[in-house]
Length: 337
Image 1 (cartoon, rainbow, N blue to C red):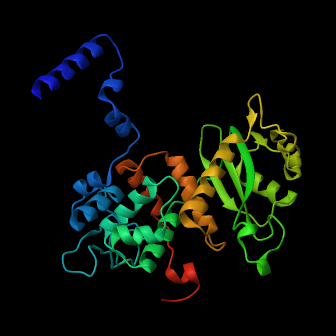
Image 2: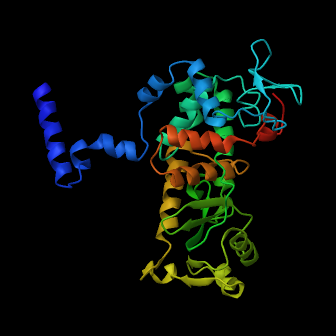
Image 3: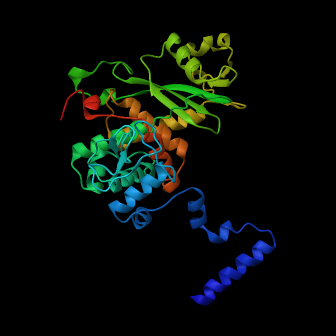
């Protein structure tokens, strides 16, 4: 075993001396490190108990500069006897690393929160609440509430896109031929929810439900989310025709005539995202409530933007996005526990 390791080390040293890339010799481990990919076992090794989970999230949120999330005071300090882990002498309130985030008032161990974030980023097509219930050992209601709070934290506050932006719309909902005869509408889109999507060329994705796909709706959403100096690529939908008057450099492909690519003009990037979203709908979730569809869209867009990562850098960014957000069970369902 030592001889084999020595041979590998010698080979790597020779390749480095000759300015040859050694990543192929190191193999998948190097590639996984570059993409921030870790296994669940590695996660649990790093965070073996609740104390380690609390320490990790506190370091992530405050580092060496502890502050009160309620009043911003820098005089806050750790409390050994209070109902929460920290005390602020200025606003005279207790707080913890959960305060001021979507984790506020949650009784679920932070280790399970970290594990859930890892799992949601590990599954490209999503992971449903039943599977989270089984993995974390919680009730279904707890798993469902947990997942929606994580999705709430996945919302991207920086929604301004620029450069080359692909724009398209799709419909999410059940298939007509699967319905009972008495519930069939005999239309393709009447019972489906329109979702509008944007994708920067080699950049991030943004997706959200819209009321309809009429001209005024599409024009407004583009104006709200895309820089006017951008070049936009769309299909032949009539709703995008006013974009040129708003200052956008718009080009389109005609899907109706079988045209999907013309030089650099295509919407294949956002179409690929729709394919992934629908695979998740059909194969994992089976149903996305119109009430919560925007959160599912957030989940898929965020995971697409993060890439394949599920390690500590990705988890860290996920918890950073949770700051300043709140989602209660009453807000989620319209009723109390």
